[in-house]
Image (cartoon, rainbow, N blue to C red; front, side):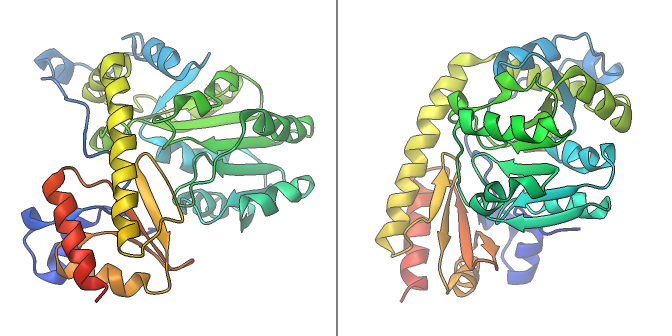
Length: 327
């Protein structure tokens, strides 16, 4: 099992600080989550039903012709490599490590490189996996350029897989609207932008044939009934989405400014996190943890990812802790 952000209980045990006293900045999950309503009792008593309106709500939200609900984009990440014969796969790095891990585990030949290097050697690949915007590297890709890459891969039966888990803050940059093309597969998550990581819900936007194959691989009832109920309403709440985008961008800019004041100039970021490369990342990660602040440490390259503080008190706490850590 690979290590991820959000291991708050482990940090509490390691540092002897009660769980409720921590400020968790180790994930890219919005601290301003969509307000979840009460779930009717009937939803708990029935098996999930596919004609409940969730797919229609997702198609409208993602501007996609066809979608498949999955138990978080992680479920698709693990299943997609099982749908191809042994292939030459390029995966963006640094990036979400589960992509390369899943393709390797399924027996594929995997190369992990920066996006520019992968694109320069596209002829040597059968599958290209990009993260848009990248986590943690922040790379973004022009839609027309991505479609040209897809066309080249598709001509020889290849795939372009694009993980858009962090794109909801800038939905106009998404390529979901083109995902009915064979060999173009776009993964979306409701965990980050909507702050609903606990429902373990995501969607795959792709051609009908791809979604049929993926559905057969995953089996029935990929999402629980309560998850379907909550997610459908969240996807339809356009007023909340609009204000959330403004709030997230403003908070991320405020975080970038705070980090810069302490000489932690962000290397990259998006509306849900800031990423800083520094040689002393491990030392500062530990120093912040002693103050009950959890960040996401990366060893290669040496860096920290900071999620968004939820309020003024959290910003002040991070400010003080960074000041002490940098002395």
